[in-house]
Image (cartoon, rainbow, N blue to C red; front, side, top):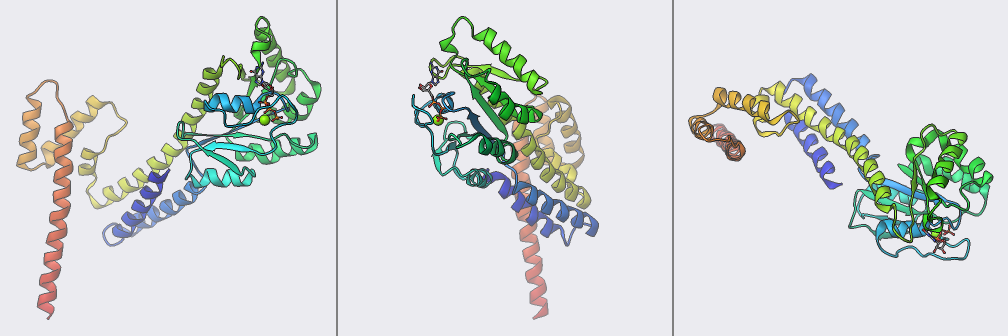
Amino acid sequence: MSGIGELLDGLDLLVARAEEVAPAETVAEARRTAEHLRARWSLLTDVLVVALAGGTGSGKSSLFNALVGASLASVSAFRPHTDEALAWAAPGDPVVSRILDELGVSRRVANRVRPGIALVDLPDMDSVVSWHRRIVEELLPKVDLVVWVTDPIKYNDPTMHADFLVPIAEHEDRVVVVLNKIDLVPDAWQEVADHLRTRLIGDGFTDPIVVPVSAHTGEGISHLRSRLDDGVDVKQLVVDKLVLDVAETAAEIARAIGTWEETTLLSPGPEPVGRRVEEQREIIRRLADPVTRALLEELESQEPFDPAPLAEHLVRRAEVGASAAALWIEAALQRRRRKEV
Ligand SMILES: Nc1nc2c(ncn2[C@@H]2O[C@H](COP(=O)(O)OP(=O)(O)OP(=O)(O)O)[C@@H](O)[C@H]2O)c(=O)[nH]1
Ligand SMILES: [Mg+2]
């Protein structure tokens, strides 16, 4: 996401500008935070990276296509089929690109529909040993979510449970188990899903998520999508925190140089609108020039009170104020230079 990079550049610039203006300890603290946030951002993305894993023939590629809504992955009745990992991801996110590089995913299709998700269809692995190692040591630390795909025929296979599901049980908050091909057992899939849940508890899961779907008929796919969207929301929160930290650092500087109150007039906050608007009116009454105060009075005489024209006016006023200050400073500098000549 490019906006965050720009925000961090803006923070660096602000810190540099504050150097001469704000107290040294405020600037030093802001610089430390800016560096820390940049380091965090280099490892962070708001994209949810989801890997489809599971036994050969369980329908990973079919499910990939059902989630994407297009036949991108090759599906076959012959096993094993997929021999090269495929990703559906919005291009341009450096963190996602690095994760896909590390996972050895060379084929990538641009995801322009759900840029919040990067979906990976994994190939069949050569042996149980390498599979096991890859999931626990390579896959889980890199991706946000593993969608383990199984079907009503193989879901009870003791080897699958012992070799794959037991080791990933302790990471269950990042595992969704999909029972695919429910169209094969139209009358029994609920029972099978319950039994699979019981088996997963036996494997060490405490509250396993089992999503019954059919990649063929599309049943359950929207439920699975909404599960993935929940994951996207959680990632978004992590990134929101970083944005909040940038804003807080800027606010610290504004507080230190005494321009904070005016800044709050312009910034939308999480507080209830009514209380905020009331606070803002108070600040304007105290700080504003005659034109702004007149506009406030005019808007207050109208019902309901609409703060939008006031916000627009304040932004214009701030822009004019900044330009006026720049001009004033430039003029002062020129006068000083002339005196020096
Ligand atoms: N009836 C039914 N068949 C399905 C469903 N999903 C996949 N299949 C079939 O299962 C077989 C395997 O599907 P794939 O999507 O290739 O399975 P895979 O897990 O990607 O297999 P590998 O690439 O070998 O690991 C194909 O014949 C699919 O048509 C489903 O929901 N219902
Ligand atoms: Mg496949």
